[in-house]
Image 1 (cartoon, one colour):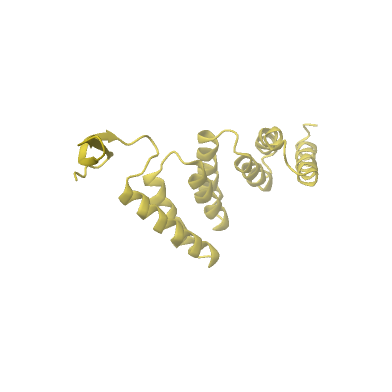
Image 2 (cartoon, rainbow, N blue to C red):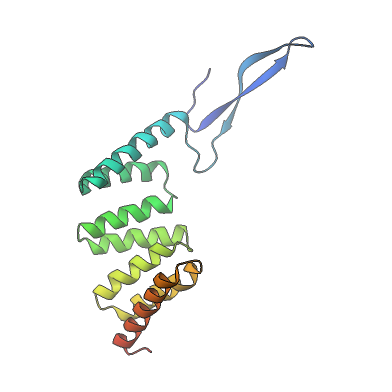
Length: 168
């Protein structure tokens, strides 16, 4: 078979007789769709996810970031990877970097509730009330199916931020 980076093979069967088929082998190469990984990259991504899970459980943030950045090279448009990079930076106390990656996640998936909630929390801790309130307002309608307790908590947090900012 032929191996070409960025392509996947399409095996075509050929009718040999009325009762048998034979595989002609790889006759056509199709470009991988955006976000589709080759078998080799898919295996590597699985390995990186396992490393990510281990390093996250052991609070090895540098190893977590290393796995996530390699995954991000493979899947640059994946908002969950960007979100996890941001979350790890937040755990390290690097809130500027965290905000940068939360923003990327939000741009890639505007209806990503947790992204806007995290941005609102960081901005609230910084007492950047207008920015915090704007992020929380984006989050609020996205969690329509949230439990009433979590939604009530979100409303309280928004109201608190608006009150502190004098924007109620």
